[in-house]
Image (cartoon, rainbow, N blue to C red; front, side):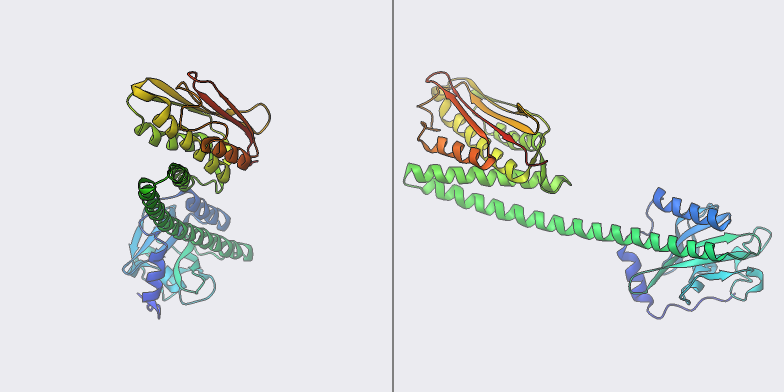
Length: 367
């Protein structure tokens, strides 16, 4: 039996093969469909997508046989590595490379083989898309072209998956670094707020902390989703307010109702900042002396197409006693700034002893 010589750079070839992480993976319909199509167009009962490992030939897809791998001594595909075009053996019993190959002998042995090499962009052969028959045969030019095209499709799919896997790895690394940076920044701001000598400075740092918290929660939401700069406001709000609920005083309840509305990431940061600021200020100042109460946050469809209505409300002591301040206080300035960022309509309602409500209606920039 004539064994094919080893590839001159077999170490690089094997490293390239393993970089695709395809060996020993489960069958997949997208590969099975290509193999089935190759067999049907070439009018052959068996079609394989094979990869040549260090000591075996493994099949990602096998149509017409019930095997997942063979030894290299049985491999015909390794002979295909020696050429630049399709290897076609019209009669395996009339070719010294295959005449005594165990796969090609006996009554059930394969008499015909044709394989298109699966090559990397660097020209390293990984395996083949091949078809086999039990009678001598010859492919038509169309059938040969089809094998070439389908082999190229297999490599294109593998390259895409490899690129996506690499992008995901980079994404995780960036996610880790961003999380660490946000945590470090948040710690520095908290420390500065505790050391602040003036109330205005402490409040400004508290607002900055709210911004950082909002960005951190937004980062988590963007990392989990595949929507790019578009954010599911309902899911984002659940994440953000879930954290706030954990720090709520025992005598205060936080109730949140947020519809699954699409907004831009910039709008999500603005909404998150206002919600964070409002809820934390309500926790601290709206319910003095252990007074029981509730803080409500809602995000729902507004009065027109594409509009979002954000409402933050508590049933606490109301203005002017709470730390959110009067109409000229820092809290109202923050609400006004957020409203301007959202290009929305700001509505503030409060009376002493009746709580505070801040509402903003804005048009989603998510399209």
